[in-house]
Amino acid sequence: MTETYELKDLPAEMQRLLVGKCDLITRCRLRASSRAMNEVVATTKLFIPSVRIKQLPNDGVFIKLVIKLFKDEYTLKFKETETGGTRICQAFRSEIIVEDSQPICEAVNWFKIMCLQKNVTIGNLIIETTDNADGMGQKFGELVQNSDEILRVRAIQVSGSGAARMMWKFMEHCDTSVLNELKVKETEGFELFGSQDSILKKLKNVEIECDSIITGDVCSLTASVIFLKSTSLTEEMVYRLIEKFVNRREAESAFCLENPGKWNLDSFSPSGFVAVDDWGDIKYYENRLLDDKMPVVYLRVSDGSVRLEVGRNALLRTWTENGDKTIIPPPSDYDDSSEYDFYDDFDDDENGEYQYDWDPENEMLDGLYESDFDDEGDYPDDY
Image 1 (tube, rainbow, N blue to C red):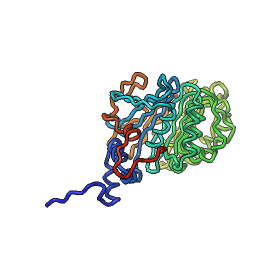
Image 2 (image 1 turned 60 degrees about the horizontal axis):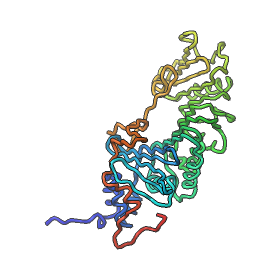
Image 3 (image 1 turned 60 degrees about the vertical axis):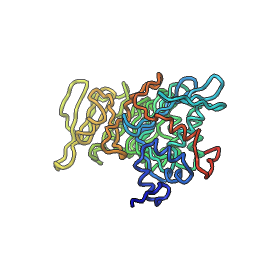
Image 4 (image 1 turned 90 degrees about the vertical axis):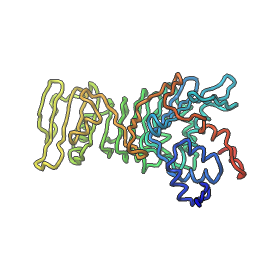
């Protein structure tokens, strides 16, 4: 006779193994079923490749989680109602109205429960602002500052006015042993060095695509990929960074420094390099060693721009020939077969047409606002 077991009767380690195979909706169902299952879910590791937070008009907030492209995506919009409450929207789902609560408060609470947990690691945290983001930045900043859990995120990418200030708040309270990549595209002046120097110097990839103010030592960065655009960059900084990358000669490392119209590189003569091509406005150099096993260092110099790559692959992966950047997503350790690209956006976040949004029964929201617990009792109000 075949014996049957309920999940709650299995050993804790077996429970976690089974939960680890579940999608996000199933985890939310289990989490909302009882305190015991909530503990199992909370101690089972979860990797979320992409979390996107976007500022919407009228203090609205857009949050999207991507687990698997096309298969496992969750998009919510938090908007203010006419009565001052919050309308939580998902495509093709019934709206949930929360009275006497601001959209940003509900968005922060949902981010906390879904992302700011000890078992959760985020691959890429994308923050997009369209206007003054101080209010949104303050609320998210208070969340991570006052939380008992530390935010675990591998890469932070921000764009928009004031987005960098919000980024610093996340960086101050994240696990620095996990964070290794920073990308900033600001519309305001951005100061690279400051109170977060110790974190910056540990990053493997630093890309600042805006007019940044650089008062510190660029060579203090240990990143293997650096992209900086600033009128503060000097020719001395260029030469020193070239020397550092050549001496280190780390395969697939690269940098691009831009200071339009500020450099006089007509007499540019980097030590150890040989000129290999001259197109007038663009010059190419190479630095080769006698040891064929060591990678060649390639240098491209144009008006206001200097790009270096160690080996031939790095530049092709990060910058195109005209200087524009292409984006290559990091591998997802959630599903090796996934063709996930965390920069692709397959939904229409303004019109609500979310083709690939899988939460047919509002399970994630039910877990927050309509949880059905067994006789163990409900969670505290602030859970």
